[in-house]
Image 1 (cartoon, helix red, strand yellow):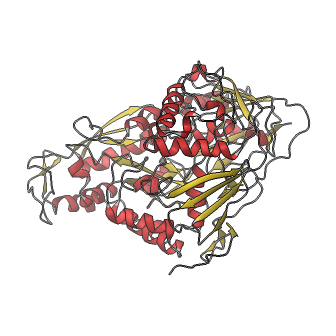
Image 2 (cartoon, one colour):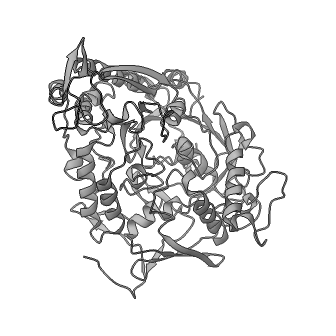
Image 3 (cartoon, helix red, strand yellow):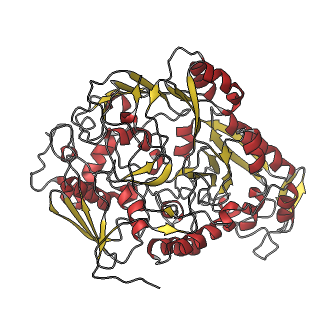
Length: 608
C-alpha cells in the first residue's frame, strides 16, 4: 500500500529496516583526518590490483571500462560524484564528502531538489547546477553508452530537470519512487562535469559557463561532445597534459600517467572540499602478478606504502608486520560470480537451461574454496545481495546455499534431462523441449565441452578454476581453461549478439561491488538491456521484481522477493567473494579508512 504524503517536503532521513536497526540512508562524517594547514609533504605509493591499471579517465564510463580501478580508485580522486558513499567501512551515504546536501523529496516522492555545496574547478570556475545539467544532457543523449543505464530507470524516469539557480537542481520524476533507491542508485550516478569540456575538439577553446547554445543543449551536440570526450579517454600517456582532463574539482590532479598503469597524483590547490591533502604525491603502482607485488612489498625498502598480501603468502603475515606494516582486511560491499553468454548462438541455448545452471552451480565448492584457497578471507555468494560487511539487506535466502557442492547432484540433474556420459563427456541423447529433454536449441550429440577464460596473475583464482575444472570433469563437463589479464577478460565479457557473439564463460575474478548503484537491487546487472547485463539475462520476472524495489512502499519486502528469486534461478554462477585485499599498510601511514565501496581517499592520509 502506498504511503501518500503529497504536501509534505522531507529530507532523505534514515530508514531503519529489520531488527538490525541499520540505517539505509544514514549519513555521517568520513572518519578522515582533519584538514592540514601545513604544506603537503611525503609520497605514498599504493599497489594496484593485478593487471587492473586504470585505462579510462572520462567519468561517463562504458561497460568494458566499468571497473573499480577506473572509477572508485582513479576518477573519483579528480572528479567527485554528486554523492559520495561509504563511512568507516559501512555501506552508507557520506554526507560530509558529497558535493551536495542530502536531497529533499516532495510531491509524493515525485520531485527531488538538490542544493550544491561550494566547490571549485581547477580552472577557477565554481561547480554549479549547470555542471549537473551538462551531465544530464550527455546522459540523456548517450544513455546506451553508460554502463549503469537501466531501461526505464535513470534517466528515463526523469520527466524534466532544471537549474533554477546556480546552486539548485530540481528533478521532476515520472512517478513515485523509493527515496533510498533513487538517492543510492540514481542520484549516485551523477558526476558534475566542467563546462570546459563542452566542446567537440581540442582545437576549440574551452567555453565559458555563461555561453549560450553550447553543444550539450541539443541531442546531436551532446552526442558529438560524448564522441569527442570518449576519443580522448583511453590515451593514458596524454591524460596528465590534457587541457580536458586537467580540469578537476577533486582533491587530486594528475602529474603524470602512463599506459603501463603508473599514475602520479599531486594535490589540487583549488580544491575546496572538507579534507585537503597533506601528502605531496600519491602514486598508484601497477603489477602483473600478485607474486610480483608481494616480492616488492616484502623487500622492505618502502617501495610500497599501502599494498596487500596475496592468499598464497598469508602464512607470512608475521614477516610483513616485522618490516613495518599493519594488516587490515578490506571487505567490500559486493558479491562474486562469473558469467555465461546467453546470446552465444551455439552455447546460449545450453546456458538458458535452468537445470544446467543448477548442475554447474553444484560444482562450485564455496566453503572449501574460502577455507583452502582464500585462507578464510572471504564470504560466500549465494545471491546478488552481499553478506558482508554487516548490512540489513541480505535475507535468509541469501545466507543459505541452495546448491551445495555435490558432483552426484550435478550428474543427476544432467542425466534426468537427457544427457548420457560418452567417453567421459556428457552428450545430449534426448533432444527436445519436454521436462526430461535436453532443452530448446540443443541438438542430439551436443557435448558439454566448454571454454572458460579467467583473470591471470592471482593464484587463488587459478586454484579455484582448476578445482572447478576437476569437479566438472567428474560430472561429465569438459572445461577448457584459458587466462588473460583482468582488463582483457572484463572487456571480453561484453554484451553481444549474432554470429560474432562467440565468448562462452568469462571470469574476471572480482564480481561486482555496488557503486554507483549502491543499494543492491540489481537493476543495472539484470534488467533486460541494462548496461552491465553483459551475459544477456532476459527474464520478465526479474524485471518485475527489480522494478518493485524502485517504487515499493515496503522496500525490504520487495528486496527480499528479488533476492530469493535470484538465488534460485542463477542468472550467473556464484562463487566466493574474497576480501578485496588483505591490506598491508605502513605503520607510519595514518588516516586510512577502508571504504566498503572501495573508494580511495588519500587526501585524508598523512605520514609521520
